[in-house]
Length: 264
Length: 274
Image (cartoon, rainbow over the protein chains, first blue to last red):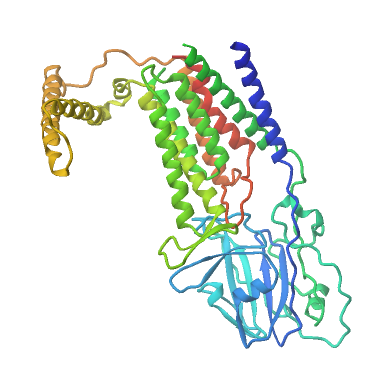
C-alpha cells in the first residue's frame, strides 16, 4: 500500500508536469484578415491607436451616403469585439485588433483601459463621441480614431486628422503586395507579422506615410501599419510549469492523506 | 493548532480566491484548502455534504452564466429570442466563465470551512478578541441552534409518527412545527439560565485554557497573510493578470509569483498535525 501511495504521489506531479509542458507550447493561428477598401465613392480615415502607442491607419471606402463608425471599423478588417451599452447608446467596442487580449462580459473593467472613439468631421477638430460606435454616423471625408486609453490618465485629443485618408492621386496603382499580418491575438502568434519598428514612438502622431498613400490609391490593398512587438517567443512558461507541478503535488498529497485516513 | 492562525489562513485563502478571476489560481487555492481540510478536520466530520453542496453551487453558477450571458464567439446552441433573458446564443465562453465563477465560490468556501470543520466552536469563540467576545458568543449560540432545531424536529417527527401522525398535507405541518418551535424556545431559555448561572456577563471573559503560539502557528500566521498581501499587490500592479474568456476562449495567463502565493496556502497541511 505504501508503494502504491508513493507511486501515486510521484506519478501525479509528473503527469501534471507533462500536461503543463504541452499546454505551454505557444499556439499558432492564422493571421487576421486584411481589408482596406479604397475604391469607393465615399471614404473615411480610420486610425487605431493601441495602448502602447502603436498606430494602425486604414482608409475605408463605402458606397452609401453615410456609414457608422462601427461599420467602418468592421470593414477595415481589424479584429473587433463588441458588447452593448444598452439604453439606445449602441454598440460598445470592447476589443480591437486583439487588445485587450480578453475582456469581462460587461466589456469594461472598473479602472482599466478602454477604447475611446473620436470623430473628426471633414477635417475638423476631434470630438470625443458620447454614444456607441454603432450610433455614430460618418460621411465622406470624415475621420475616426479608436484609442485604447486609460480611464484615469490625462486624455489628450488625438492629432490632426489631415492626411489620414488622402485624396486619390492619378499615379499608377502600386503592385499588390502581400499583406503583413495585423496585431496577433497572442504575442506568440507573431511569427508571420512584421518586425517591431523601434522608430514608432509611444503615442506617436499618426502621420501619413508611403503606406498610407498606397492604401489610399484605388485598387491597392495593404495595411498602413501593423507593427506590433512579437512579444514572448514560444517556449516553456515557468509559471505554467510551477502551477502544474504545484497542482500535481497538492493532488498527490491529498490522495495520500485520503488513503491514510481510510486505512485508519 | 492555534485558532487565530487558522483564522488568518482562512482570511488569506478567501482573499486570494476572490481577488482574481483566473481559474488557475482558484484551483490552486481550492487544492490547498482541500489538503488542509482532509489533513486537519475533526475525526467526526464528514466532507461529503460540503462536497455535494459545492458541486451543486458550481453547477448552478455555470448554468446561470451560460443561460444569461450571450457573449462569446463559440455558440453551441441558440435559444429563440422570444424567450426573455434566456433568448440568444449560448456560448462556450460563458460556460467557462460560469465554471470559473463556481471555482471561485468553491475555493472561498473551502478556505472558510476549516473554521467550522477543524476547530471546535468554543475554540473559535475563545480566539476572538475581547471586544468581540459577546458578539462571538451570540453568533456561536445562534449557529448552534440550527443543528439543535434539526435534531429536535427529527425526534418530534418520530414521536408523532409513533402516535399515528402522517404528513400528507401542508396544513398538517403545524402539528410538527409548533412543538419544534416550543422546544427551541425552551432550549434557549435553559441555555440562557445555564450561562447566567456560570456568571456570563458578570465581568470580563475568562479562558479555561490559554492560546499557545507554537512555531508552526507563527509560520502559518506569517506566511499565509504575506502570500495574500503579495498576491493582492501584484494583482493591483498588473503583474498577476486576470482572465476573461470573452470574446474568444484563451489560456489563462499564469504568473510564477501568483502561483507561489497560492501554493504558500498549503503550509498548514505541512506544518500542522492533528
